[in-house]
Image (cartoon, rainbow, N blue to C red; front, side, top):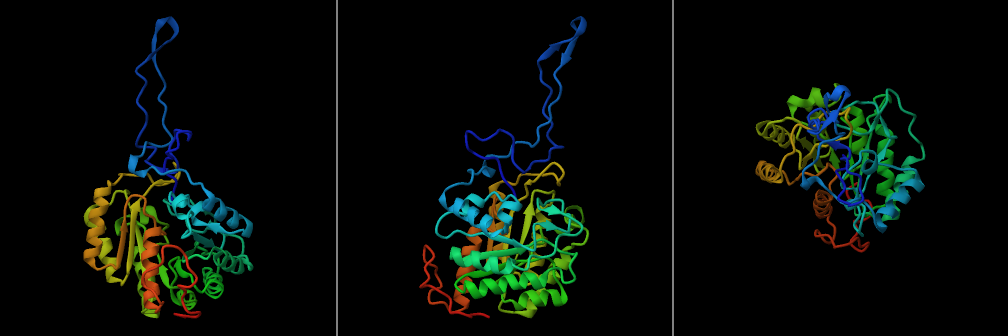
Length: 364
């Protein structure tokens, strides 16, 4: 998740995080000659840009407005971490505005114990203990906002005996109790065994876990402890534990994968029972992260969306700026969840309306 180049005329010229590979695009030598000693001609020094220019379809307005300021102020007041900010998501301006604002709250701290080559979140070997007051603050925040849909994710906490699953589950339970009208999605680490059971028992409506890249690129892009098969196991097992649970995953493109590899990766996800799929362009957070190999054009994303729908996914969001937590996908998932739980209207009102509420305890 990342910040594309702003379109504001007063914005600085260099690209924001997750641009094209710095290694791939050195500036050309300046053709103008400089005069050196004894009249010797010197070429201008090569200046390497921090990031290559991105295509126009990846440019978004700078975030702002009353809704954005309100959510930013609330997260600061309650001491909450969000992926929207920590991972530099380009869609924060869109998602944090309007009456149907959405956000992705990140629990268990803002430091991750894994070192994936695509991710902007800080990494450490061991992070501070979980904040025992965090579940209550998360529940309070979602209740105050009256969100129709919220995503709760976490950093990886391999330094904790249960990977943080118990604390994470407590956050979900607080939201379910304090904001019973809100549909809850959890975007989880690759939990297995009792850790996964603990999280699923907290009764999220949607469980997401991202495979991130095609199988061939797993060891190159993700932390060595991750794998495509382990991720598929997490998704399959979650469905086994709760067959009525909607599951979701995400793939990034632009890292050197082929079209055939994408189709294969999508088919494996569908075989694991995944319901929702999101696909978006990888953008490089810093020069230390994996380079962008290709900027995929919007027309290719349309082809991928059609291919995913043909495989049987209930919903596919595929476009350059789509991220795992993507507003349009969340609206669709919310409609399906409310329909499944027997809400009075399967089609959502245009803005949050407490009268269109889920019965307290529905789906628990």
